[in-house]
Image 1 (cartoon, rainbow, N blue to C red):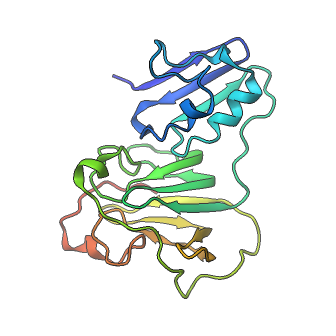
Image 2 (spheres, rainbow, N blue to C red; image 1 turned 30 degrees about the horizontal axis):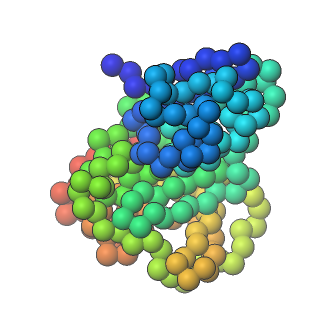
Length: 219
């Protein structure tokens, strides 16, 4: 049974993929007239203007929400540069112009916002499904910027999200990170741990090679 729903309104349609929702609640706190978990259906596209809906949908960090305006105006534009925010003990939030390889799909998806699993337990890899909560995953934010990071990227560009079979996620491109001390740096083609066992989180250190981490890959 599909967990994707479309809620149609007079000015805008709202698309929701329940498998990618981890209850960040940016929507219900941002626009309760449209998003209300205590109401059935919980999404009312006519509860606010199309502009207001687009603004709040764009805050969803996982990409579980998307929207299509009937007038075709002001479609969501991804961030010009790709950035990664590491959630302590949680996923890696990635924003930007992304081409995401998904296991079982021939063509990569075009995405603007995704949450990547870091614990290794998600049933919807490479995306986070909140499995880190029950797994008791411990994965700090980025404590300090790696030496190979540079102070600034040369040109705005997107990234390809390459999911390695039984291995890491590689972000092919120049990607912005911010460390816990506030330092900002750009890293080219970073490999992010998704088995949950790296001693250099959020980056891969080869811990997946012991054969205990099994997960499909996609280009």
